[in-house]
View 1 (cartoon, rainbow, N blue to C red):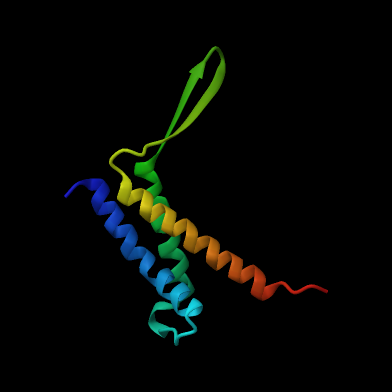
View 2: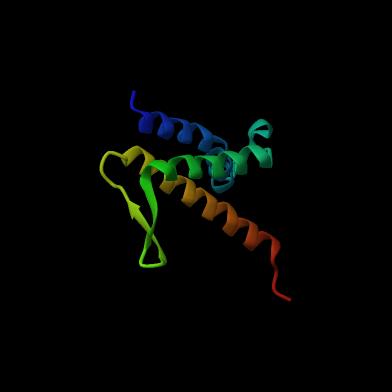
Length: 108
């Protein structure tokens, strides 16, 4: 199994607690207490985001004529699973953040 595929599978496994939390909230189901610890949900979410960003994004720095030049490129070929896990983690993070903002901030 390729290294990128293993990272993607690990990323999907780390996304399971956040996916269960968001799914049970949207479907108005009883949430399982074992999978709802904030450290498990947010830690897995951020770790999956970071792990799957490494194969997809390429960051390079160089020195040219006395200036520091930085480039960020997106690699699409061969990283479909990583891109899917990265997109899902961004979507779940945005959903949880939106819920936190809507639930906790009320107009005065």
